[in-house]
Length: 148
Image (cartoon, rainbow, N blue to C red):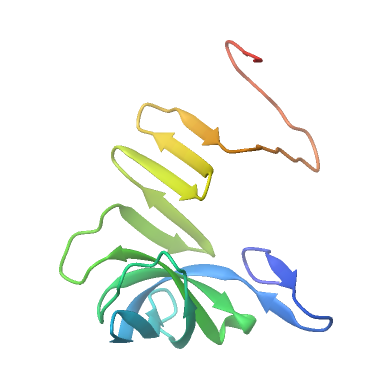
């Protein structure tokens, strides 16, 4: 299990270990990343895949990636900024956690699911179904609670 505490099983006996980090693209061909250098550790990683929504990337671009197989391989997930341009948002990785700060808002979207954080403090989750799970207490603290 990695610092993120996320582990999933594929076939019996095979374990894939996931951990997100930020890297610089060290090698690319036709917009596809082939090699990365992890910003935190300085280690070089071979890229074994990329997210289907990943923009074309080139040497020097910063990307968010997931580690696979105990960290030996990487899958590039998101281009953070192009070499020579300012960051689109303040993005840092520390202690196995990725922190993203944006001045006006942040949107995570996948198919019909959407999570939005706004600068004025609103958090909106939108999807076909929204589930909340807690191993312990689930607390709702609000001045007003609206149901339907």
